[in-house]
Image (cartoon, rainbow over all chains, first blue to last red; front, side):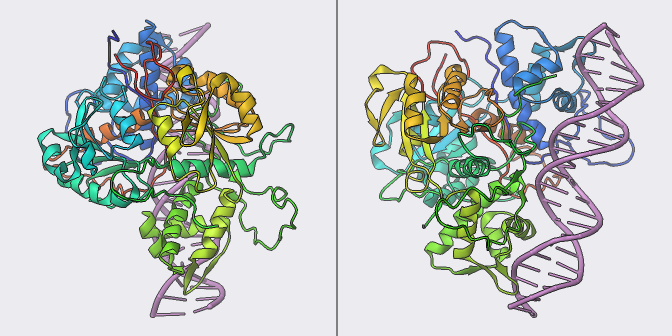
Length: 289
Length: 289
DNA sequence: ATTTGTGAAGATGTTCACAGCC
DNA sequence: GGCTGTGAACATCTTCACAAAT
């Protein structure tokens, strides 16, 4: 029963990305695609937030809210309204002055901008705890991100269905991914085999990788890699704990502007470990005392 | 105006952080003022990268490499050497011109800066697939982030040990967290109960939260929230797929530098979305139509 | 009367390039 | 010669504040 399903959503990110279709700024009017592309170059930071707006908007749509002001949406998304309006302006002018935005229209435009009108099959490599979590994640399949392939090294897992999809051996990555038209690869293996897995995914034509392994992947220019690193996240939090005291009762509270949300920054790793034979856990954290 | 604590909540954190508080450390032992506190304010973006450098350095230390140049470290960490040097300069001058940096010294200084010399007990709320992954993550306990408490709603899980720690009921969050001196809370529940769990963690004095639920958490000013949102990450990748074709047209190929992994930015969530349905207990994923 | 859309100002972050030290 | 440390130039992102539109 969850009808409607296009929502999706979430947030943040960070890399620059210009959306320019072709010519950069050549003099004279350039090619005019079709949709009055008001959008030209969408800042990477804005792309991440658009995903969050989309989630909030989906929630509003579910509650039959048909219109929202930038202020309301901004509060719900945890950003300031000026930023929200600017973000939305990158994808075009779909608001009505004095009124606000129509939820349905905005959802459609953001989905179009994020390329969610197309299906993106996902392959998860490394079926450990994290891999299982990803394979069973209901948020993907119900939207445009069906998990269509699973890989691991462990012979005992071959053919075993996880979240409905049988696990294949990583040696078959190229073949299976090509066949199932995988466009996004999620690497949830220990650090050890991550680079090799990555190479195979790239060989299979996958150009987008979500890396949970604590390693810096080496990829060709055209491949987009996003990293999620739990250890790094923990350490960033640790840094903040160190800065400000903790249970602090009534400290003067140093400035530290701390504007607010938004973020950027790095990420953490996922970590599962156990993807094969006796691989170590591999983690990416501190090391010796 | 969106007065009050709206800030934070979601994305990352972005604020500058001053490392000043010289007072804190040194519970007993005199704290050498020697540390050339060159550091004053460390950009948030730099903090995230320091964690990455630390991991690379640890790897070098394991291989008995004693010295590295900024160029080598930079390549391994996926950043440019000028940036790396600037980042390191925020924590002090520990390099030797004409030579490079001593691995051991740098590790020690970064750990000190990130507050890794102190133990940070972690509580994981929501023992679903993701919660299990976190509880079993070998990278945390072996380092300074022991997972010391687990919580869930499911009665069947009460007392069941996961990764060695028995699960407690979320109603006991305040009591247990206070007792075990939890400093970091990881929320791996469905979006639905995330805010409530968050409130309890805050009540228990937890000031650092790692949120995997697809919601913008509302927290008091002094609490630091970092978000990890898988759906958002997927959508960001989707955006990039949409931009550049996949294997297709021979577009002029705009530059889009896009170096590579580095990271910066925020992240993904765990997500589930559809917050109501008859979700099961609390797990950070699943949920489905 | 409101609320969007956006130029311009301000903040933050990145890269350059070179002086200084080994 | 080689490499760090860093001011200054540059690029990106955020916030302000106000004109335009309804």
